[in-house]
Every structure is written in structure tokens, then in C-alpha cells.
Amino acid sequence: MLTIDIISVQPKMFAGFLAESIVARAVRKGACCLNVVDLRDFGEGRWRKVDDRPYGGGPGMLMKCGPWFAAVESVTSPYETPPPRIVMTSPSGRKFTQRDAESLAAESHVVFMCGHYEGFDARVESLATDMFSVGDFVMTGGELAAAAMADAVVRLLPGALGGGPAAVSSESFGTDGLLEAPQYTHPPEFRGMCVPEVLLSGDHRRIEAWRKAESRRVTASLRPDLLEGGRV
Ligand SMILES: C[S@@+](CC[C@H](N)C(=O)[O-])C[C@H]1O[C@@H](n2cnc3c(N)ncnc32)[C@H](O)[C@@H]1O
Image (cartoon, rainbow, N blue to C red; front, side, top):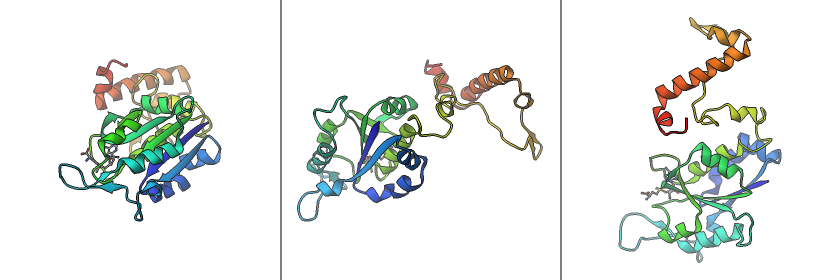
């Protein structure tokens, strides 16, 4: 079973996520185990300091090595097999994709490191096996990035979603790498907008062919880069 440890200086940010989400339900159902670790518990001195001014000057504070090494070492062991995946959240990281979610979902232990302030002392990077960004923008901390990635991973785990494996296999970025075809539910007509006739036909071969064609059309229109990337 997958264990996820999220290390953060703002652990309370995960309270809602752990109480209300599909991830919370997956944890309750025993699909995975998720722990939030307070970096401050590994802070230095009386004030449990986790940050300090950067050498060479510059704005803001950096997260110190000591607390990060102690926190990561508290949830991992050098003897773990397979070794844990330790993910540093960073705007400089490689952009996280569905393939990365699949790869992490196949592991038994994943640790997310949530940065804050101006980020990490560069030496902290040596702890990480992966450095992921959730997009080309800068947030104040890694918590939302870690929550987004953990959500994408957990929903892939057996038993996490009500619909079973089919619920994830036909989605965007699935095995064919395309976006999902448009979907509709009741009513068949709403304000003059009709559900495509084929979806009401009951002819599953035609429906499958329509979905494949639509999936390709939508991908070419909204994300042509996915077609150009050579995966599809
Ligand atoms: C204010 S940011 C630090 C930005 C850093 N000074 C820079 O210019 O790259 C603080 C923390 O938020 C997290 N973070 C911010 N944007 C992110 C993104 N797009 N993807 C992943 N993590 C992000 C990282 O953990 C980062 O260390």
C-alpha cells in the first residue's frame, strides 16, 4: 500500500483536504496512508527556526538544511526497498504530468516537500529524487502543489474511486495521451443545445468511434502540443 508523507511548515492547510476530499475517502477505505508532518517540529532552537537570511544578500528568507534533513530522515530509512520517491515542489522543477502521477502511484512510499518563503537552501535539493512544478507560475508555498499532485496520484490507486479502473482509464491524458471527448448528461436538449444523436443511439461501436474522433478533434483544437509531442 502507498504511504504518502507531506512535509510542510503549514500543516493546517491540509485539514480540509484530509477531511473532505476523495483523497480522504480513499484513506478511510484503506487505499493509501497519508501523513502530514510539521516541519516546525524539526526547527532549530527555542523558536523552532526553519528559515534564515540568504548568503550574498537578497530579499526574503530561505528554508534551512537542518530542519529539512531531519524531517525527511524522520519519515524515511536508507534501508527502504524500494527506496522512497522524495518530491521537492518547485517552480523550477519539471512540469508534473499524468505519467508522473502514474509513476508515483506505482510506488510504496512518496514524500512531498513543501517549500515556503524564497524557497530552499540549494543543498536541500540533494534529498530529492524528483523536482516537480505544477505550472509556470509562482505560489507562496508548496502545499497546494503537493495537494494537487497527491490528489492526482491517489485517485489512480485501486479502490480509490467508486467507478473502479474504468473511471480513470478513459480520461484525458490516458493511454492514448489525448484529451477526453465531450460528455453529456440529462436532459437531451437544454436551451436549444442538443446531445449528439450518436450518444442516444445505444450503438456502442458507433459511440466508441465518435468518442475517438472527438477526442482527437478536441486535442487538436485545445492542446495541439499533445499531438506534436509524438505520444499520439
Ligand atoms: C515563493 S516560492 C519560491 C520561489 C523561488 N524563489 C523561485 O523564484 O523559484 C515558495 C515555494 O512554493 C512552492 N512553489 C511555488 N510555486 C510552485 C510551482 N509552480 N510548482 C511547485 N511548487 C511551487 C515551492 O515549494 C517553493 O519553494
